[in-house]
Length: 128
Figure 1 (cartoon, helix red, strand yellow):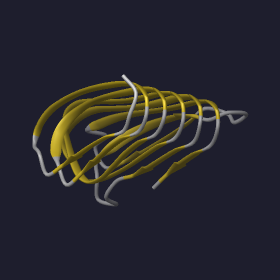
Figure 2: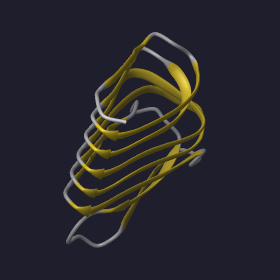
Figure 3: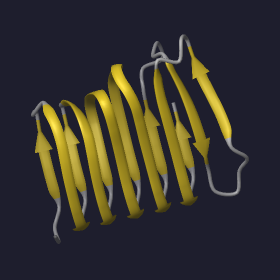
């Protein structure tokens, strides 16, 4: 309920919920359902497959994925905080980005295989 969660080098399906504290996942291949009310979600050196969702009420989301070819959907949202998403340049995706005080924009690459949705209530989005 309160405290940080750190997971390393475990593949599979993640269902992680925390009330107050950060969630930090590194070197994994999974479908992710990560939620924290107050804190930060950090995913690095990771691959996504299936459906993944990253949700924070107050805090930042930093997701760096090295492979999304088996991912159907990726959703990231925060009410108050910034979102930084990094995916490989050769990925096939369609990303819909809703950023605070900005017009909704859609970015796509290749065949649009992976559907990505990014939303901030108050905060900025960096999508690479």
